[in-house]
Amino acid sequence: MAKAKPKYCEICGAPIRGPGHRIRLEGAEVLVCDRCYEKYGRKKAGFSIMPTGRQPVRRTYSRPKPKPAPKPRTERPLYTEEIVEDFAERVYRAIQRSGKSYEELSHEIGLSMKDLRAIAHGYREPTIKEAKKLEKYFKITLIERVEEEVKEKVTIPKDYEPTLGDIANIKIRKRKK
Image 1 (cartoon, rainbow, N blue to C red):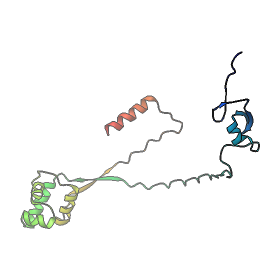
Image 2 (image 1 turned 180 degrees about the vertical axis):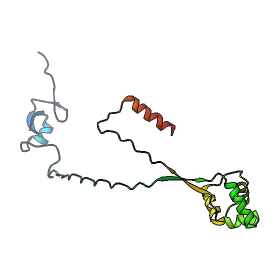
Image 3 (image 1 turned 120 degrees about the vertical axis):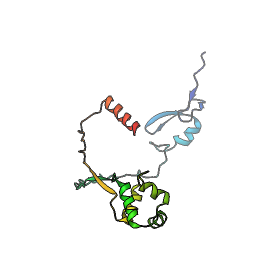
């Protein structure tokens, strides 16, 4: 006589002694052990082991309102500030006209004596901040505005799909910056 293959509970996985019980659980008919039958078998049909008693939450989603079209910006020309080429000569002449010593001027302007001398003799170019201090004190022009051309922004068509070469070029450019 061949030994019967043991049956296992389809809920807890325990071996079933005896014939087992067939119950309907969430619309499916399952074979369960005595313990699971005690828990789930005597309940009403359509019972779910999922928590109940709460109504499903219905969320309503409203479509996001379209953003208004951006207003066309009135583009003002871009410019950079640069120090004039003959800054040393202009500063040196202004110092001579003032008739004051480098020490007196350094306290009044707010620059060190060393920096003032270096700028006046052309050993180094003043920073924009230093140049503004000198301009204000001596009433001379050391900074000039250089306007840059506004480059037309390249527009890419919406249906454009980049090639592998385009992507490789983009990555190379990013690495350089």
